[in-house]
Image 1 (tube, one colour):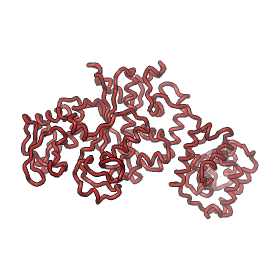
Image 2 (cartoon, rainbow, N blue to C red):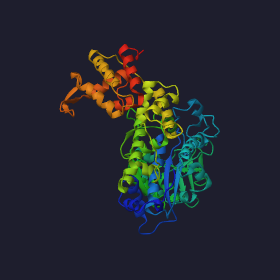
Image 3 (cartoon, rainbow, N blue to C red):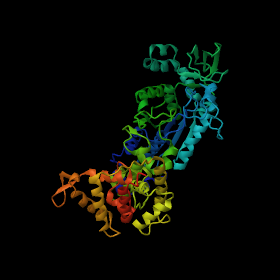
Image 4 (tube, helix red, strand yellow):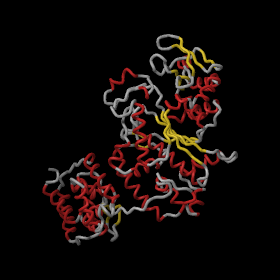
Length: 548
């Protein structure tokens, strides 16, 4: 993502930033207010967390994208005079408590249960040593491809290198305070065995969930019974111990001085506890943003271990990255389903926002998602054909390659070629791939009334010039429908004062001609597909050849 500072903005836009209701600006103003009494530190730190227990999904990417949008808004508000960092932190020292369903050979990982993810062998046979390293690499690969400005951090590296040692020793000193904060949040049985420290067994290498027998603040050590019953004492430093996930949040915030972190609704009830642990350990809790969770097509929470959501690569097989960024920007506090059917709409909405941007005033531009997706500098693109129409063109033309699609587009918009519109060429490739993988045709035969309507429609189209525009074609279709009683809607009025047209007319066209329940504006489709080609399609439908 390119970076645009406040100095690049017009005075009108700068004025509008102060009152913009766009959520990234609202969050950025919280960080500005955080330091209005003391002045800014040298660096304001934004952080995102990632649990590499399974392959990264789009929700993980969304957290980075959204945090980047807040970061950019903050840089604009401060005139880019305050240094910022975005740290993408991977909790890869967590023990593997469940074998993911989507690894090649789950049984292969069974002996490594409860070992840190960076100690579990890589089941994907890639160049990375461990399961955690492999999943971290997948996340970094996409973030790099998208162009995010970030730093990657590994919990394993931070614990083992001593980056957390100072605060871990402080946690030993303030063990009783941490326990006093944690125990009221636990059930009676859990209270009896709970410890904020999780030692790594010196014998098995597993992350142990065991009670502490002794916590020595002077020596910075903890004592516990290892898996074989042997009483064992280890220092909390140097990666020999990690913290339970709830105290780990607060410990990390205190150790790194995090100023902003967003997390999903499932963490919301624990936010105050994370803050309290951070304060006990001498830190200042960061500003929060709690977003709603993504759901699969069945309304279930997306899980990395289940693999029931779209992966990053899957989305990008069928749509450009900007459409994914738009999906992340829109209504972050509203639960949204995340599956293949949402992709076409996201693509078309992105280009609609992009087309609207130059015509908007400063206030509207700052609430336009493309301003935040492109760091305040949206590109100027000419897209003569929307993505949904490309999908319908693919449905009607059954293209084997983009050349077929370009033949229709060149007739529709002379002078438009892959060289003049490379962005459109990419969209055609996405449309063909989406059509091949997801568009299922279910043609039905027309009944007697529908045959009459289609015959009349074909005849009407034959009266039009070959280069008739979409509006002319649409009006011709409406004229046909108004003359057939079944398609007259007496709750609507036509321009002539007669009955309007029922949506059932166009639904019939989509079902009979395209084998789909829904479709584009009919006039726009015919203008692109061609009048002669549409009449041939109608003829095939009347002969019963489309279903075959």
